[in-house]
Image (cartoon, rainbow, N blue to C red; front, top):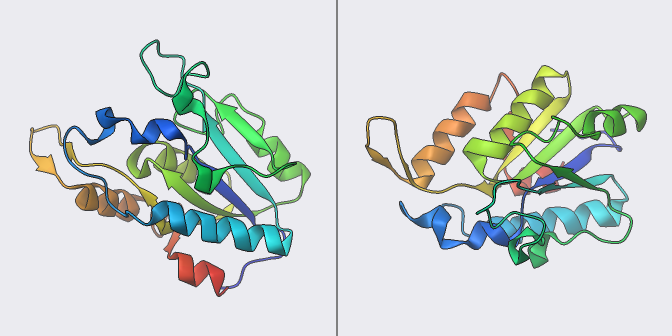
Length: 187
């Protein structure tokens, strides 16, 4: 794996709201070291001077911990933007919808993207699929993303690891290449 010098790192929705118990009501999350891996990716990107974009979910739902007037809207410490790093606010699960993300990437001549964040089968999957559809060379970091257990439409409880793995299977090869933190850091 080789990454061009202007490969952008995009961190999706790593905000304090993700620790709200509502997310884990069906069961625990997977990838307990995801935030540590995100911090490792950010540290390397910052040292290299490569572009970083932080995606922040600004919910419009009245009861959401992700609302801008709630403490959960703040970034988690491991994913805190540094001065000058752009923050792209979004109100849907897709960071390209009703934002200037694509314009910023195209203007900077960025065509390779590395994604990490939450929730794998929601905002991460929606955004990664769109990136692939828009023609970006796209990577998704498996162990720097996570999700939660949930019931499928038949009511069967699926573990977070199963939900995560199925989401990765939906994307890998068609919309992105799934990689690990170590693979990205050695690229």
